[in-house]
Length: 70
Image 1 (cartoon, one colour):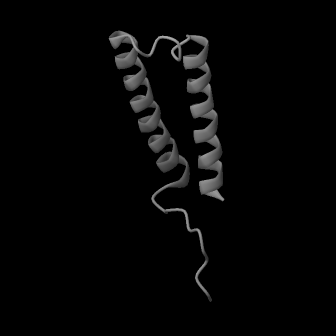
Image 2 (image 1 turned 180 degrees about the vertical axis):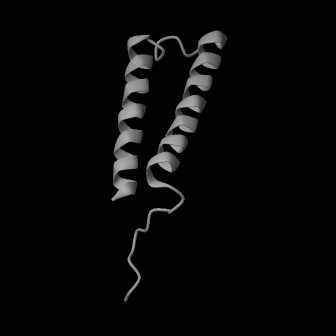
């Protein structure tokens, strides 16, 4: 259950960042070197924050896709 909460928070954060990039019209200016560098840094920071959110919420236990038989 912790992983589901972490995935939801990561989704909210990613949608927020994506919305900010869209509202800043980054999709129209990505060919400019300064915009491209800014977008790259933004995406990298977004990924790092997503990892921090996951480990803060879910802890060190990874998500299990299949349950082991008891």
